[in-house]
Image 1 (cartoon, rainbow, N blue to C red):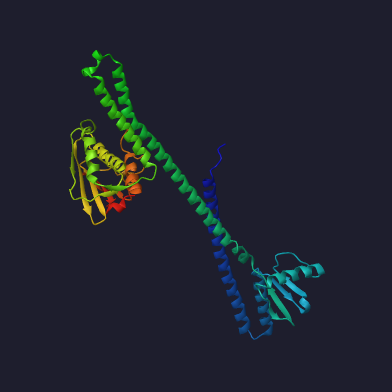
Image 2: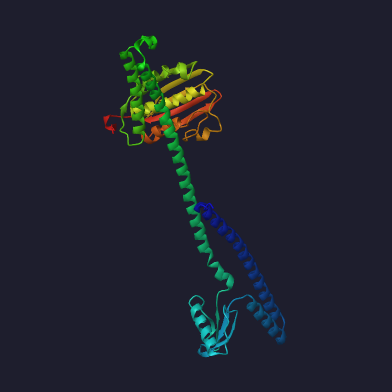
Amino acid sequence: MVRPRWSLILALAFLAILGWYLVYTEQIVRTFRADVSTLTRMFAEVQAGLADPDPGQSNAALGRLQDIIIESGVPLVLSGEGDTILSARNLPFEADLATPRGQEQVQRYIARIASRNPPVGDPQSGRIHYGDPPDLQRLRWIPWFQVAGLFLTFLVGVLVVRAQRRAEADRAWTSMARELAHQLGTPISSLQGWLELLRLPRGERPGGMEGPAIAEEIGEDVDRLERVSRRFELIGRETPLHPLPLDRVTTAVERYLRARMPRLGPGVSLEVEMPPDLPPVRGSEVLLTWALENIVKNALDALAGMGGEIRIRGFHQGPDWVILEIEDTGPGVDPAVRDRLFEPGVTTKSGGWGVGLALALRIVERVHRGHLRVARTGPEGTVFELRLPVAHDAADDT
């Protein structure tokens, strides 16, 4: 048997308290309406007694008025000289006033209620002590149930938020692990190919490749592995930021992608426009290059099979910010994922892990204290806006 989760139990308890509160509130409303009806009846009897000059009818009206008061359920005790209990009605317990034990029991009761309900009347002729009616006693529990309901609501909210964060963290770690495996897979597969080539006799190697050429290719794959390792190492810890010209980042991304665009995006052209007077930003070259590479790869995926243009433009916005716009002429972002585009695991590609834009967002906003957003999207294309703080001087080096 599967044990129910605490969040479900608390939610059900909260719903039960809410239902009880609604039902009991309706009962209170009905009680107050009944009290209004009782007061109206009392007023009618008083008016009848005052209007009738016959003393007998006045006494009868007083008797009926007394009956109405007793029917209201208010505990009433009439005490005489020496706190002798003369009569009692509507007590919350049974007591025989003819016995000393009954007298003592009621005297303890009136002593307990005297602090909140002082008696009325003349001590010489008799005083009337009154307690709280049953409806008023039940009202005292409402604040406690309200507090319990609010506390349960808070607990349910905390558990839901924790569950959502745990699910997001699990999804992020899963996506990150898959992305790491994907990033490492290409150079490792290439290294395996070069090793197989080295095992062939020289005369059987394609193109007559010699050891130095193969070693150079292996060196490039090793550099790629080191770059991937460095990226994932930096993303998980505090990263030092230095004044960095953004054209160095865009040049590195352009060089990397132009060599691969015939395979990744045939028919796609890449244009980069970076003003020479653009101020440096506070950043990490390794991580910003990775973030921009992921954004441009997303644009390449949007143009897959149809061709088009990708434009990277940089410009200065005010004294404190530098803007990079990455624009493509693709079909726009699918409305089904538009609001969750930067969440880990969200992708429109059948073979994608949905981690590229999530990593880019983390790099830009958490590491560099910048902003990354979809500035506009539609049938004419999509524009990503990357905003980074300017490094005003060498003191920005952290």
